[in-house]
Image (cartoon, rainbow, N blue to C red; front, side, top):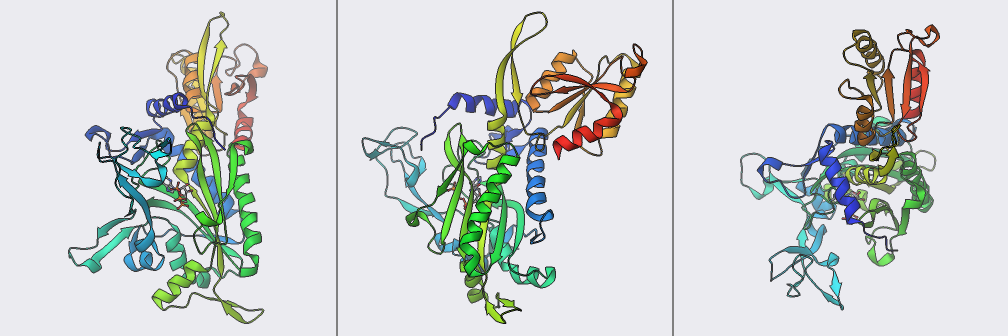
Length: 453
Ligand code: ATP
């Protein structure tokens, strides 16, 4: 399936992200570091909300999953046993004309001939494997044994700690170990903004089971993961499931699905859900000489569990959320003047700021004091933003661009000056419909919490 590319939409999104403080190029004032990004004040909140929701549904709300947080620096032997040291590579070619390094499997073709996407040149070298792992040196010695790697995925520390977690968490099959954390890959061609970067975060679950349950659980987890994306605001019709063909699947996998999303630059992978059989635990058991098997109390059998792995990218999901949320609409004000409203229609659950709190006028002490009270009331429960500068319409627009689902305005009615019945009520404005309603301050927490949780 081909999805229409929309580079203009992507450009607008990238510029909004910089202008509003979602995402910045890393080391920007020194010219930037290619394929590495920093998240600004709004970006970090969005990312955190996404990770928190994943943790909530994948770990805290389940009896059969526990979490862990492994180290980034990884023993060379781990990644030797997992196969990464020998085979975690992409095919690389050089363009002899402009010297660009390219991924051989992603080259555009013209009349059946592969060409360089930078200069159009057709004089390319033979493809050769390029290992994607970043290595580093542990301690002061230059000894080759002192090599360690920055992990290329979070999964391996889960396999290596399988026995420790099993013994301490006292779980029975099927059960899972979940982890969220940084991973590093020296991508040949980082591109599409934060979609393919060299430093990124993953949210991974390794769900261990009996061999006979594997195929059924693979489908179960695919369904769970699709529901997750719907629950954060990515509509099902924009999510596509690719059944990875036998020829493209890792040799040890009995089945793999890719969950793809319609990005403005095409249909691309958000998450892989793979049935990895007993490959990883067997590899580590053989290489370390330490038993990594499971004793089944009922059947008295010992065996190496199989594993299903839903592996999602935090940054790719953040990008999908922003792409999905971005909207422009023409609105007409009371005076008949029309303007373009840019609005990020985030699901309230992931929105970086949940509510803007606005005193109608900043030079009215009573309004400011009441607005500060409302801010203090909501603050322990959610991220709120207090803003007293500029016309109220402008303040609403600023929050629309940040994707804030609610605006709370404290006006003279709040003070009960016009109608005592309205004392301690505020105007609650809804971002998407721009509708406004009067709500009692004492009801605000309940109203907002049910929308954002
Ligand atoms: P791709 O084919 O796009 O390189 P992959 O199939 O190698 O991805 P996995 O090894 O399955 O990716 O990693 C699991 C998830 O980690 C991916 O679905 C993606 O969301 C995320 N991920 C992998 N590589 C990157 C990267 N370079 N930048 C951002 N996220 C990444």
